[in-house]
Length: 242
Image 1 (cartoon, rainbow, N blue to C red):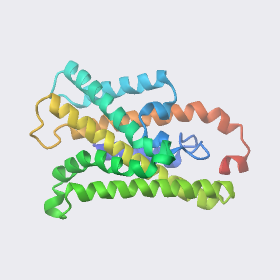
Image 2 (cartoon, rainbow, N blue to C red):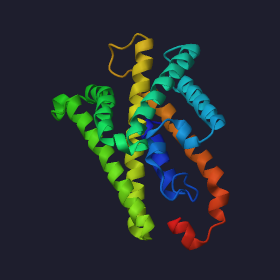
Image 3 (cartoon, rainbow, N blue to C red):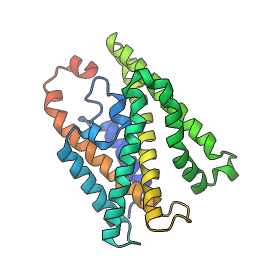
């Protein structure tokens, strides 16, 4: 059975070398899509349903310590919570007027994942990082992605393609890492609580991570296939700068 790092490597490789990378096909990928729930990425209720179904099947396959019906029902409930978290994370960039108010919100929703991360890897003992420091770091990364997005938008308007691509890839990767991290740790927390194994330290982290990485590969592949005809019809210069 493949390790989560190999799935993550596959996602990274797909985004870097695929000629039809889902996010690379957009001129300026809106941050609200990256931080938000899968519906904002797929832009389709049908593919959202397929993505959720795939995640449920993947979780059942990867997690053998609980019955399949419990795995399905618990992960479905976890998806509802993670979708709400995604909406909250996307809200500050969706409503610029409330951006400053939304920053404490981002910090707040980062506390639980930060606590789980700290406990899982014993960061407070090894590196003297408590969960509040990690949550602050996540918030700074969030702000960094917003700044990089603004820079990419400016470079796109001035047709500075080199700067545009560097900034674009940077903010996409940072935003996806934050979004995936919040999703994985919140879903793992829900499943562990529902199975009454909350006293253990992230007992379902590996299986939840695998299920989410498989789902992300599916979402990117579908988005790439949907946009490929438009991309293939562009000229080379138009393709590079969109």
